[in-house]
Length: 114
Image 1: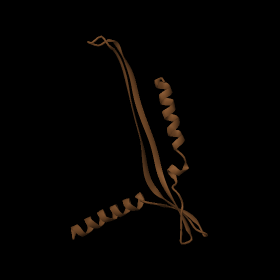
Image 2: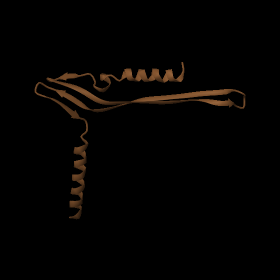
Image 3: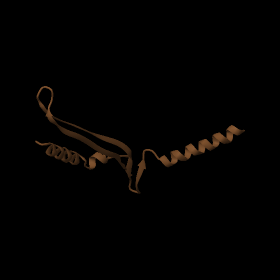
């Protein structure tokens, strides 16, 4: 198998594993609600291959290659489904956090001058 075929088979394998269950977990039903966990999934891989031009000091010609890859999964929130509504609940709301930090900074300056 050549390197191109190897990379193609790796790419096909990664694409095959990127299904809905990798992003949305199994639903959990409790107290009249259905909770669906949501995650962000990222795949990455890279590799290289090379051949030596000419022989080394032992008279051997060389070639070599390397390959690496990884998957990162980050939970981002849940989808809550009830009879009344369906809503997305984020695990962290960066806007609220930034607002609270700014408010805390302003209050710190105000009370620090007193």
